[in-house]
Image (cartoon, rainbow, N blue to C red; front, side, top):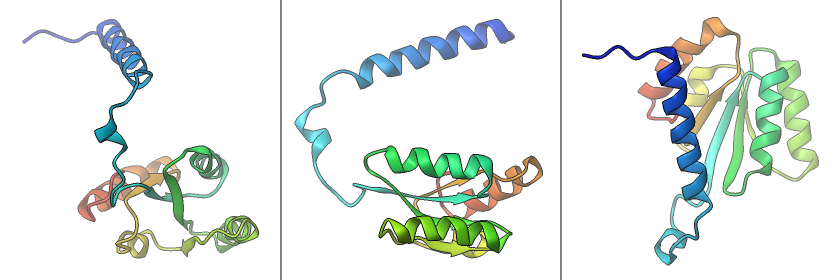
Length: 133
């Protein structure tokens, strides 16, 4: 078994990323434009401080992605984000407990923007709940 060095990993990662960039710029075929049940990816963001707010702003710019839920342990941060959604006439669910968020069947994926020590546990819970993490 050959040992993968950091240099080889970076080279391979860059080659893969550039390949993805090239193929994503190619014209798409008709079958890839068929509308179906998965037209929108419904995302929840857990952790609403700096990174979480940044993730929400970026997701709002992406076509086919909707932020449908937010979660934070601090109700004050939840209230601020929910107000932004209601001001733009968008519906968003709010949770203070990630476990309740993961029970929601209307969420396809979660983004974890919490302190590092929560990442692994929330990832495991998200995978167990059948969410993309």
